[in-house]
Length: 230
Image (cartoon, rainbow, N blue to C red; front, side, top):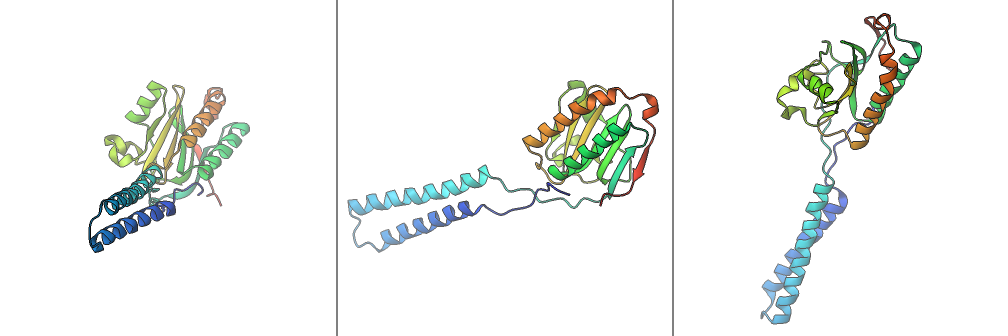
């Protein structure tokens, strides 16, 4: 899968700043300790050097906070494949295939689900064996008409709603499609979805709304499993 958040260490520039600051502070202390007399010029120079060393260490801390470490990818379990409603119009099937593939390769999504009129029309990525059923979080998202981003699912009391999406999924985004459906993304790690991922998900939901609303009951037959993606 593309777009996976990979773990990383402290940025190299931050390590350099921190090491330089610590070394400078140690040298200042050693210099003051070995001085035979604490003259005013030496004291002023030592104070300025110590402030510069502490400043470098502060820059390293702020650098690390500004560029936080990426969360480690979760070891998610599921069969890789695609389930797609079999009687959908060809144009819509092509759109769902293309769009879901872009989400899986261009974002940190592990699974994509499209729910419409009480049933899943599309599941793609890592698939759970159990069927997903929208719960209170999805309903609140639909009623408000606003996307819900659960950046760290472990912190939310209602996280059990998404166990059937993919067991252990660490992050979820739910995008409403009018009053009749949702696009749901499950991510590989906590806080892995970016602002650009949210914009892409919203844009695709808007694009899908018109062809979905044009469907009739005959187009919504039970989904047919397809072979796993290569």
